[in-house]
Length: 270
Image 1 (cartoon, rainbow, N blue to C red):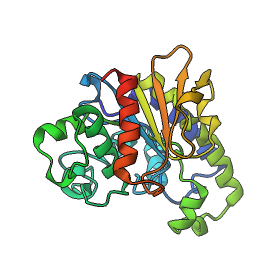
Image 2: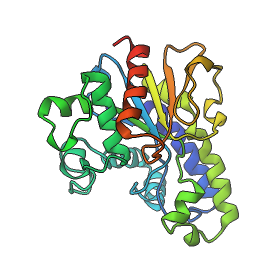
Image 3: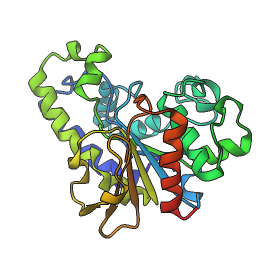
């Protein structure tokens, strides 16, 4: 199971009904980003979710609306579950976003490169591993990862950087749509749908809204400005680590992985 359809399908249907009311052409690019898992997540002894800022290359918004209007919104969730894979082909028959075939690069600032290095450090103790030279056992470990984003529809700045902003005809409609999408940014959905042991957020941003619906505690003793914050949530065993995005170059990738990885190991009892 790459996505908890029982949990997310009613929420996405509600969102699509709203999008239909304000005009299905309110956004010209990617459909909703939802939290997913790779194949081995549910069998992992310690379940870890990695949360980034936002994404590109998602199944398009109009395609989501077409699936909704044809009564086949489940198909949209299936297609999105194959946009990023660890092994094998993607939903379009290519390996463009396969971590093994195309995305395992030497670019240490890349989100997926960093997550794999961090995950292998936490789970297997690998230090500064070359992810272009992983074996089958390593890939089985990577298949245990869950992944999400802080923005289910791209942040305005990301849209401007990717040339999307100018394509939005009615900015007022779009902002209504993005406001409605913010409910998908809440960590509560990841907690309730996937019950992770640890969530690692990789985007240093003031976003208390992601805790909506939760009673959280910030642990001041773990705080390092711009690098590490730690939270616990009342009623959940899940721990939350908040760090910066891999492309923040204040310290080396290796040093950052060691700081966040060692903290994660301690929280997980590894």
